[in-house]
Amino acid sequence: MTENVGWIDRVLRIVIGLALIAFAMGWGVPATGWNWIGWIGVVPLLTAVFGFCPAYRVLGIPTGARHAV
Image (cartoon, rainbow, N blue to C red; front, side):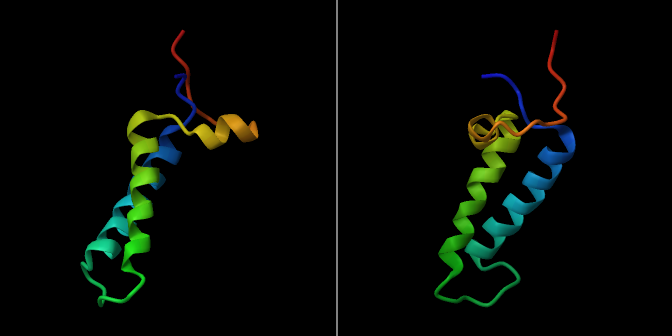
C-alpha cells in the first residue's frame, strides 16, 4: 500500500471524520433519526490514519503526498 494522502488532506479527513462521529454519538447536536449517518466518519478517519485512499487510486486523482524513496 503506497501512501497517497497528503498531510493537508489527512488533517481535513481527521477533522471531518471526528465531526461526523460526534454527530453520530449525539455530542453537541440533538438526537435525530439521521444520527447513524455520522458513522460514515469512520471512513475518512481510517484513510487519514493509514495515509491511503482507495478511491484516489481508482479514480487516478493525483495528490500532494510525499513518497519515501
